[in-house]
Length: 321
Image (cartoon, rainbow, N blue to C red):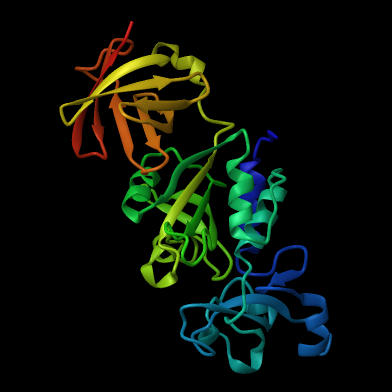
């Protein structure tokens, strides 16, 4: 099924709910929801002058996670650590242990953005998203280094998904999900937002810690919504077969009119290509490799293209007639 993701609607939702429970009034644990209205009755005696928020657990825990609290409204959306809120102005609802709201948050944000993929389980959500016609899996179980190159390429846009898992599937195929929000202006580095633990570009938004080996999900899958990518037909000269030389080996690339690219030498590789206006960028799904072919000399668009593999080694592409 094809839907156009409304990136602006998604952005507004994420900006409004990254630090607090989703608009459905629930926060999910590993096997059941916490109903905020019910907890309001038992935790703050039904008083409406308390706001449900997530706070980094630097008092009740290690500070590496977060906890669900009721706080006085003055602190909601302005303070994000337990230590920043006086004890008399916060009431613990749920500690870090058991919180599991990341896929719920991503699903709710996508729903507001017009995407009907929904699951409380990260792996199920990833499978739904990868099966959609308009999505492109730019990288599948790759390392931080590979994702960093894609993040700085300018291909990603608000609403794209970073999912974290175990490449050997020993713990969880995918165990955490975040929403790509923006590129920092200085170095075009990615910023993300998520629940469990709360994060956002206005707090930290760094995507890397969620792939730390200690998290048990050190590999990353990147899913891009491609409905608003430049029309591949505008780069019609690229379509068809090219021979590409890398490390003195010849590979054969095929660019199709839907933005997909494949290569073959001994086996077929699959990826996606993007016209950035001054260069063609290719992401190879199974490795996270980024190749960039410039339009600048000595390239001759439609005939030959000079490029780089992972910004480190030369590539030469020649159009096959």
